[in-house]
Length: 445
Image 1: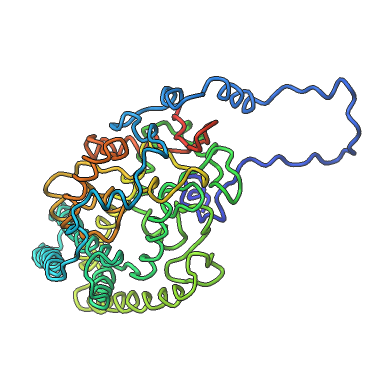
Image 2: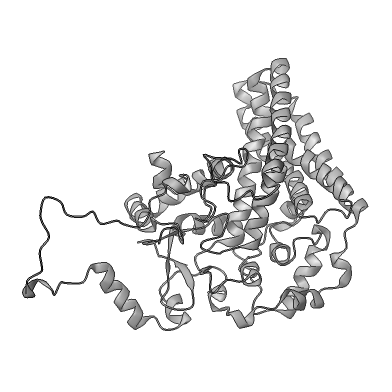
């Protein structure tokens, strides 16, 4: 747990807060002598005073931080630049908001068929060491294809799949359960993520640590992570973050709400009762969490039965290895959709739903990944503005948003592997700027 605490994946209750000064012991307090009153300011206070004197505009902030392919655009967007949801809906063709159950089922069937075909091919790979490279390729390809099923289930959770709500939940529950995702639990937490995107307190995923963070308002301990990154060096730190996020990030989020904001604390997607924080599961949601668990238990039982027939090692290669790649894709998408060196987080006063939605960034994943993943990464701004839009209309919606709201729409042309390394090695901790309610990433020394 100490290792997890050091690198941002500890349960929120165990994350280091801002520095606490211990009281002096062994001496009785007394009134200060006149010559004792004046003290030198701490280095932190001196730095803060310099910032107040020197940082007066957004351009001053941008001069102090690295830039992504957005070239500071996300920082320059003001509240007045953000359209209302009604204005966006007016700019988008009306048919884009209509769900076609037949078409949605077709895409679900395609993703399931592609996924099953991959497993069928994998069944013929021999269980010998000489075939290890082939097994690795199988896991990467199959996990990538399975992500398409994940995205379809994600669309069901957003009510973007069909107007038939029972069918929609049945499809989503089935597909997510196949991938060991608790459908209703995730549906709720993901809705919170959408409602509070890049909100420093209420955000639900990839909420950064804050330098000298205030308890209950910010995730504290950012200064500790910056010090660790400095000691490790940017290269080793970036490699470590890639491993922690892409390999351990998804289970850590499900089990204790890793990377979530302070509002919901140490949540658990399988156990909606204490000792875990229950704020994420109001009303009937706790019962829905238990309903999700039924599917997970059934799927684990099915996997155990299969393992008894074909062997645990073969099941690990056929199912477990691709599963890890699917999880990595999920975290990669969410991480890059809302994080980069010049994308800010916001205070409560500066935040609004639409401003958070427009802090989402679209990226170029290319035609192959867009096909398998239903353009989840290249049309994500539209998805955050209105998550009930089906994915097969998202490209048309994206084009309308980019045309009508060019100052607010964010697209970064940086190749994905370059952007991923930039984020992993540079996005360590944020600090609140002197004005504008923006938290910006502190450059790694």
